[in-house]
Length: 97
Image (cartoon, rainbow, N blue to C red):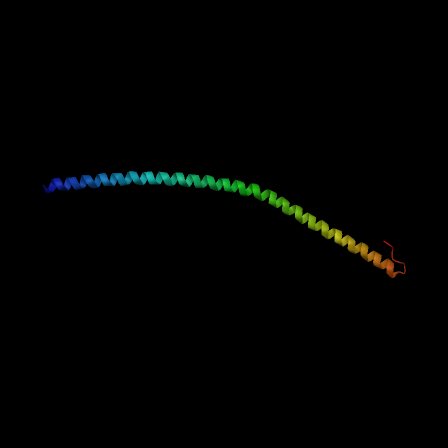
């Protein structure tokens, strides 16, 4: 009787461990699929961020060029204005606008 009970308990434990093993394999398979999907999402995000970064850097270069152009224009105005000031100081009448 004791041996039969012991065999039944061992058989039940074996079946239980087998089910747990199968369940672990299924869970690991799901985890692998989830990681694969996450990798695809990250790859897509990388592509999108690169596609956005290139035009933004180009726009940044454009705006810095515009700023430098405005600075150059102001410097030219300062130089022209200083020459007009010298003409006034030399006794010439100021030009009428």
